[in-house]
Image (tube, rainbow, N blue to C red; front, side):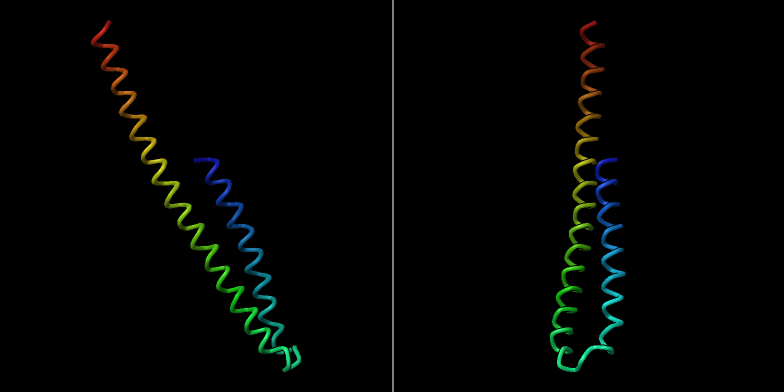
Length: 91
């Protein structure tokens, strides 16, 4: 799990940085020339959508990692038990 945790934490940290930058951009709309508002709105909508996609991927990645880990742990436990039983049986 450490590799997953490190990677996910890195993504979450980077996402927070980008989220702050998006927040800073949101504050700038009132200072923009009116002719740029339409383009600004379109760009902000794209940024918000892409941020949502990244959040969803992180969430799915966490769930997938937990599922993989759970499966590996179950297989490991089964193998370990089987080896212990075989060792007892074939002493």
